[in-house]
Length: 234
Ligand code: APR
Image (cartoon, rainbow, N blue to C red; front, top):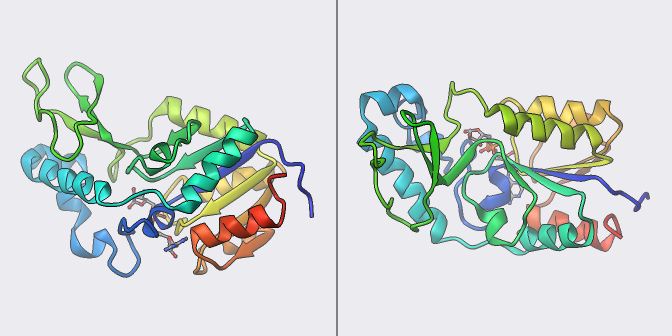
């Protein structure tokens, strides 16, 4: 087994946060079973009824704060402090990786902890935990969460950075994503095409399982512990 990996990419999805108690999107108890994304997670819904969309996201913030990073999150930040070319590309918006002290975090789908003024084109950090500090920008415009909703384009700079990191990866570890939403599928294939050793940690089969060199059918924290013990990050 190879252990001299330098450029390591962790690609995480909702399953990474599931062990912390944050619900996934599509699995049992998934958010999109309870809420229709068409009513809560797209620009159209926000344009029609911004307050309802903001209520929904405020609830996501409150729920995220009831949860804490688990040992897997901390394992990843330890690996990053030992191997500084380690990056986490996450689809999660809950900020859990940063709460576990990870620094090289690329948030593909934005963050619950940032707001955006669509009129002034500015991003505002809003770490006033739980409730939003304000639902309105100083200019008077209503703020929207800085989240990539359904039908939104991904941020260009974020894609560029993620693509760069993936092309250079010699180890790509997907953790807890159903790999159904673009760019999950594209990124894993890009890493593989560029020669990365591919590992999937997920208790269940995914659409992309067949492309991986090694599959670990465990929960995120257990899978990471296993890889650490096997010496993958020595
Ligand atoms: N450890 C690892 N994986 C887990 C765990 C766990 N403890 N629990 C569940 N999983 C796996 C499930 O088997 C599933 O494959 O996590 C995955 C969660 O899939 P989704 O709910 O589809 O979440 P994700 O892939 O992150 O969704 C991508 O879709 O709804 C949009 O923008 C939203 O970022 C989200 C994106």
